[in-house]
Length: 166
Image (cartoon, rainbow, N blue to C red):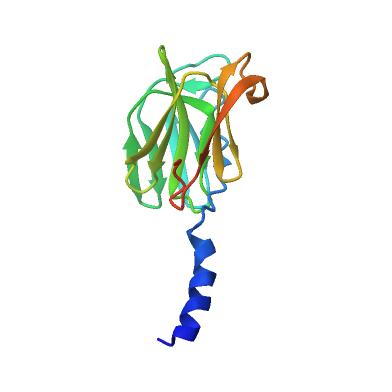
């Protein structure tokens, strides 16, 4: 290949290696009656389903694994903790599923591959304050409340080209 053409092509390709994750929240809603046994949310190609055994009142978490991830006829499942209803996110390409889970000892942010359900990343959340800010994941430390603005410290994890925290 002509060297004069190679350099401009490399310059054009460089931005593609940067993260373009744009994680967006999935609305996890009842699939059926108001207090359904199954809740789910969907992107353009990926659907997420979780079981619900709470039959009265507001549902804010799902303590019964597994979480089922579907893409067309293919599906896989994620075993694990107690999933928070309002903390389920898909990246722009719908290749990564970010969820928050908790147990009696604390919380975690987990990122899974949407085709295989393989766990790709796990971050401990000693406090529940965190946010997605562009192509960064911000974790709060020494917080006075659940709001990130109340935290004395913030750890910023840049998201790499695979939409995983560095």
